[in-house]
Length: 126
Image 1: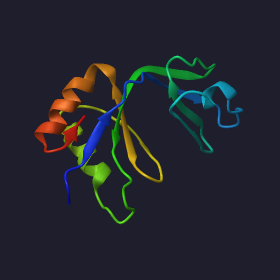
Image 2: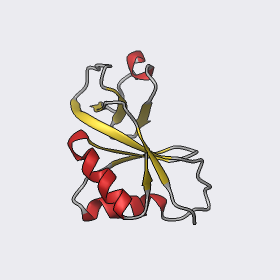
Image 3: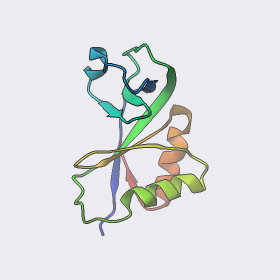
């Protein structure tokens, strides 16, 4: 397999937790990146930190690395390899997957360390 390339996003992100039956705030659907996931337990929203939502819980200070894709569904272990590499350096992630690729959210104060660790493991980080 060829070397995976990750692109560092300039966006500051916030993760919100709302009640599972809450309406999706229109503001959450603005900006260049957002992710909305509803389960029977919660409504999770990730969006740009410039967008402020009324939520049960809020966790600010996230940055994002995007795996440049698209990635074929037959590929195995992409996210696992990235997560294991970062876990070995005690860097926690919040992962989001889409049809085309994977996104790794990590705390802003861990971004530079994550970039260094991933490069040392053979990933290209832009």
